[in-house]
Image (tube, rainbow, N blue to C red; front, side, top):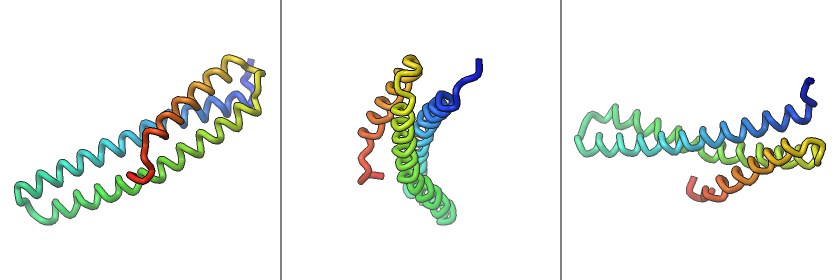
Length: 116
């Protein structure tokens, strides 16, 4: 039996939420790695070109955090809207989606938007 379009959309949104959370964490990890690399370059007084490139990469990664945060908020809101539309037609999927919404909201609450 084929899935209803709404159920499929909810599953896609749940997967997107998980993917964007991983993406956000990957950017945070990248930032830490670049900051450590820059510190190492500064400590060793290596060439300015390498330091400049690491700084560019750091700025690029930092610039992705607000966008990723915003996309995660948008996906979570879309998921909320779709779950409301689904109602109790599929209780199991509604429960899974609600868990995803709660987990995403917790993730978002742990991020201080002023710090990104």
